[in-house]
Image (tube, rainbow, N blue to C red):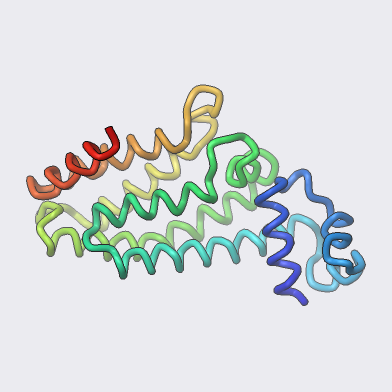
Amino acid sequence: MKEKIILKATELFLSIGFKSVTMDELAQSMAISKKTIYQFFNNKNHLISVCMESLQKQIIKTFKQIRANANNPIIELFQIKKEAMKVLGNTETAPQFQLQKFYPEIYQELKSREFDQVRDVFQESLKKGVESGYFRKEINIDFISRIFLNGMRGVRDINLFPLSEFKVEEVIEDFIEYHLRAISTKKGITLLNRIYKKFE
């Protein structure tokens, strides 16, 4: 039952919003009592935290699958961005912005876990890029991965990039290009230019 509650609650949170969904509505949508929900979760904040941890694990799993199947690390990064945008969204009702605004402690939990979980995936991608000749041999992989992950946090910060002035997808796109041009070889830049030419 706990897993069913997590799945349904996550679905509602992502479609309606964290603030809008009440425990009564969740119970009603599952045809169960609120008491049943509270057997597994202390309160709504606890439920949101568990749901976001579960969603985060799924996203990391998807990132790893993309990395395993991608032909090269540059295309891989664009595929990961596309997948991430399904969850991030561009509006104030998007999950990550609601978390930042209404549940900052849970958002901080996500950020803390994100660094540890994504860093390994990203470092492997950087190594693959160096080995395949797309990224420069002399890059410091640990430094680059930390800078990139910190930058990705920054471009998703609604205080730094207000949604009234910036589109999340465009800001992330610009940051990825900025990042890739800084670490790519001539081979990598050629591929990057080909990718952007397709978008024109």
